[in-house]
Length: 339
Image 1 (spheres, rainbow, N blue to C red):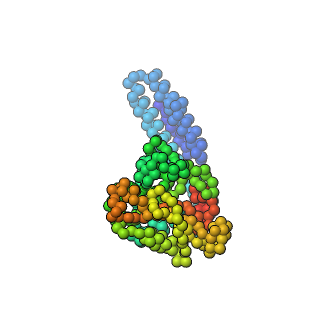
Image 2: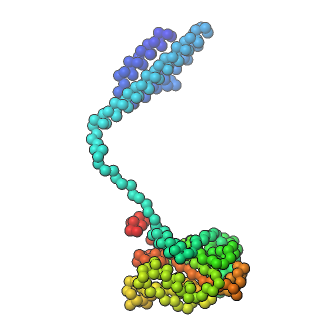
Image 3: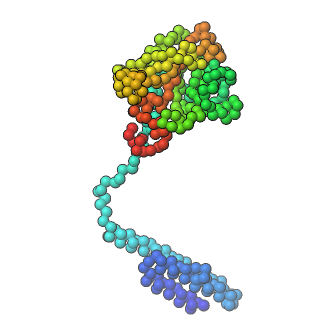
């Protein structure tokens, strides 16, 4: 058996020397070290030896196995090094050629304009407030002077989770949440996502963004609202921007108004962008309703305030002359790379 073992070792060394590929090396491993290999066969034949000879023979077989394994590992490294040298000789690489630049991400157009709007209001002394998108019916409707039988609710296509929990349809609930926690003076904006059950088309989406503004203090008048929003429009669209206010109705403000900006495409003459009217509506606003103040523990005899809400998508679409709301949510790089 010892003679057979020595013959195997010599044969394995010789064949390893002549081995030139990884496939040949794997075949040799199976031949000598596999479950049905030559060394395994020798171990199985040890049953014919005398008991006192078996330990010595087992040690010799294991020594031979270790020697062959080490030789194979050395051969693997030698083959890998030879392959690398061959590739270095055959492949011509110009290490001075500039690499291909990876595309860099950047802010979404909605985020760009939102940051700009935040900066404008921060510059006017406003703070930024945030609140839950999953909201209680109380904050979304009832505390905003819209009880369960209020007709304004019929115009709201709301995603209800339970009878009293819903996805907020507006950022106006932040008016109530802020006033409940903070006594006047209050001066905040609350940007965020809102949800309504709309069909997806060029001008509607079940998800969009609003920015709510709220100011409450002693002696706040409609003229303060008008001056604040005129300054905002000029900061956002340029000093040449012209705005107008039209009477309107919102449940949580009284009096209420909508603010239009003179069409920056036609200068007020009428065009396709403004649908021939010369003006483009950009936000709704008004004086905070006394019932809303009172419900939040603020005395409407002592304090007054104004609130406004604007749609971010509408602002961005007007800013860049985008005519399809769906483009904001499709993640098409051909569209996003333009900003």
